[in-house]
Image 1 (cartoon, each protein chain N blue to C red):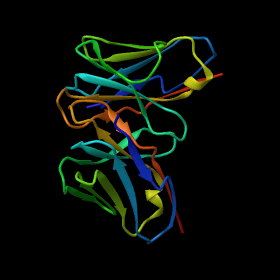
Image 2 (tube, rainbow over the protein chains, first blue to last red):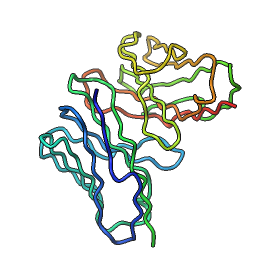
Image 3 (cartoon, chains in turn cyan, orange):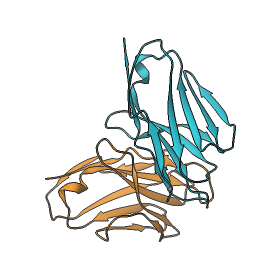
Image 4 (cartoon, each protein chain N blue to C red):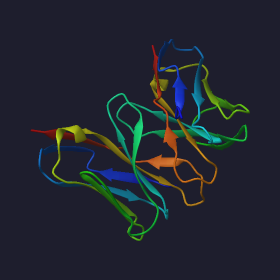
Length: 112
Length: 112
């Protein structure tokens, strides 16, 4: 059974600081997704990582994937209040076109 | 392109009642997946429809059923509602064999 673990589950950080969210998964997979969710809203796709060593950046967020370690990271650089949200990672099982398995999410709060 | 649309956005039902939620996929997509997201949790896979058939199912009771129509739109039905069915229900559409799923805005179901 594919399992996805995120840590930390809660993160309070000051504006301007850097931090990393970690996502571990239990079985081989070659597709990892990061989503953002604002309170009461749906999931907004941030990154799709498709291969070992993949790195993608958008603004203050950078995601990477290490398939050998079964680990993805979401790095936040110089946090701003607008980044406050819950961030989820999700993984497909390797057989293709299969449902996403989500982590529990990391609730990020950026404070002044 | 309207993206993935769900209806209704909110509804309140009484225990024991039945509810139907609707989803129209993104233009060109043929696969619809349904997820349940309880408060403070990550989305959990309910089932997936492709070519008007249920292709995969998560760990949900038979009270949860669905349908996909020839135009690829889909319904989620829940019978004999329980308080624990209160959640955000998310529909995701994708193209069979494709990489990314796109989520609708969700339906917030409250069972009282």
